[in-house]
Length: 114
Image (cartoon, rainbow, N blue to C red):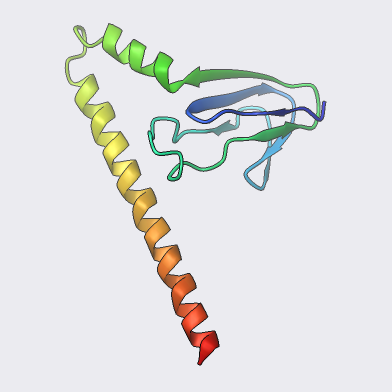
């Protein structure tokens, strides 16, 4: 209880218990860190969490996932392309939202300085 956990580039699935993270209480079945494929940590959401009760979770690191993709690339040749497409699409979305938020902040500051 009350332990902090979470590392970048890791997907988490809560099996049992309660924890808080990213402004929400996570309960059994919750998934976070789904942006673990992004190389740029600035585009990923924070994944650090605090256990509120006894918890059990599963985790998958980016490196392990990429090893699995490589391992199964012969049986599923399009898998690498699909993973790459997802990574590019997610990175684009996050960069777009980050730029939009930055421009909104700049516009608010300019408005306040008038």
